[in-house]
Length: 317
Ligand code: AMP
Image 1 (spheres, rainbow, N blue to C red):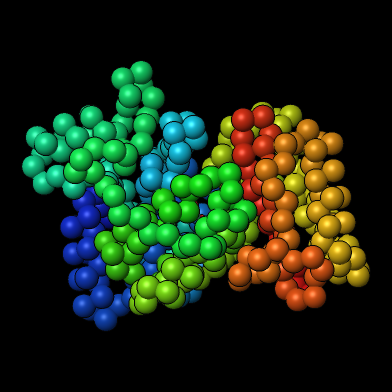
Image 2: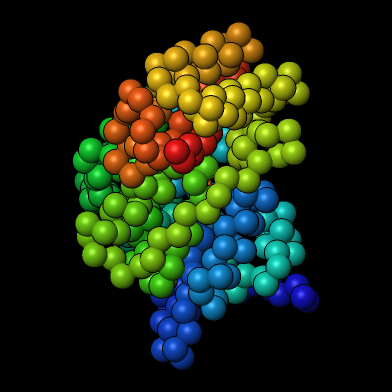
């Protein structure tokens, strides 16, 4: 199929008008939210979106609201032109790319807008990108919280992460007004949180979860993998290996979660990783289980050097 050029939209009003026009023609819109630096994992979400909707919007926006000051907002990789080339090459193409500059800037007047961007976002004077959602009197202060689900797993070490994710996804839903939105199961807790939020707040949007895409050696694709040295990348394979071993062991009857977790922690630590968490949880409630009696997901987060990686595997027994 010939590559198609997506329309590039930066303004939220323009995005909403585009989407409303499409939907007024009786066509459906699918949204794939991303933070850019696209890889095959992101492109697989677009392919999934094609199964559920007629036109596809990909958003590219590194959301400052989900990073705490100590996290890697300023070093988050980006390659807008490379991303557009990848989007053009994906089977079935993409109809629109929504790449807003700052979704937390509410000033209408452009003089004021530039002033706010310089003051609140972009750079701290030392060239470091800083969050644009903090303090200021007229700044952003409304957050969506998924009270229980946001607390476990990644929420323990990243306490503002999921309120940032849920809030930006809500904003994207209100701007793009999609019929369907596709999320990767790579970020399992995020997918479950968005599903729960959509149910609880009655968004008229179907949420689709799409399978984890891995490199041929098993490493789950992630934009952050670019920061791994070759040695760290090799060590990081211990995550997917230990998930696979746990899954096989469980399928063969080893259903005690304590033992499965201990083995994974040992394998990853011996490889040189630093465990953030290794938890076996029920697939929807994300409550920890002690013995596998029904479908669960084994979720792991671990550091290799300065890079924090997450991965998971569903165990359906
Ligand atoms: P990100 O750009 O990292 O915020 O990711 C955007 C979307 O792509 C999220 O729904 C992720 O879960 C999904 N995603 C990222 N990596 C993968 C992967 N390896 N396989 C499947 N989906 C992924």
